Amino acid sequence: MAVEHPVTAPSGDQTRIHNIGYRAYDGPRLGRSYATRSLYSQSLRGAYGLGRSVKSKVLPMLLFVVMCVPAAIMVAVAVATKANDLPVDYTRYAIIMQAVISLYVASQAPQSVSRDLRFKTVPLYFSRPIETADYVRAKYAALATAMFILTAAPLIVLYVGALLAKLDFTDQTKGFGQGLVSVALLSLLFAGIGLVIASVTPRRGFGIAAVIAVLTISYGAVTTLQAIADAQGTTGAIPWIGLFSPVTLIDGLQSAFLGASSAFPGAVGPSNGEGVVYVLAVLGLIAACYGLLMRRYKKVGL
Image (cartoon, rainbow, N blue to C red):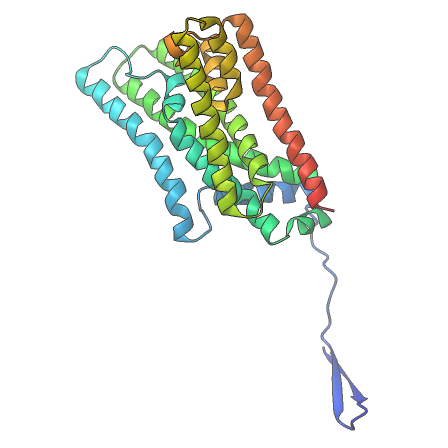
């Protein structure tokens, strides 16, 4: 019950101080792991606009549909024509749709981190109970999961369609598994690059433009140099040039170890030895992105 303590003010007016009976919290304390899982869940839902305004749902849902519609059309054509194989390999689909994937990560990476930077709420996260590593892992895992959903969903459509078309089960299952490995690595790589770039600026618009510029300019420059090398007959340089773009990195890795056909000029993909360099480059970039995010948020959280 509230207790009133009359106090006489210097002006002669009577003032009351109310004891409203604040009580200490005596419920369960769920700790860092629960807070990290909650941040992961909230960030993953936000990557598709869930729990946000209708306007926030339009772009991610539209891009998701754009990713899946071509796969559905390919399946319909394969079933109608009774084809012996799908028009596109599972490992090729993400490379073909890389523009849509780049647009998705460019739009959602800044959404994931830029608002926290703009409104200076990051130190509040670190006050208690989560730490810098928890925040970075939750954000990284959430965006990588969202991208894996985006890139794996059309592969599921292709796989289910292939089984409905009564294509060879063993071949389709093997190709589907290889495709999942490819898009998992692509999701980790693109999510890391997107978050590192977006964490530099609190302005979402600048973050979107920067991510698009890095992904598209690097891909355009690498493919142009590869075409020049092919025209000049220096085909041995083509695989090494492919190391300087995220898209061509994934392309080279899967053509070396996942049985995919290469999109490099003249279909000159990396050999197994060169493919090892591609694997190390992809894993190194993922680790570097995580390390850069840790350094960035240790400074922000001070």
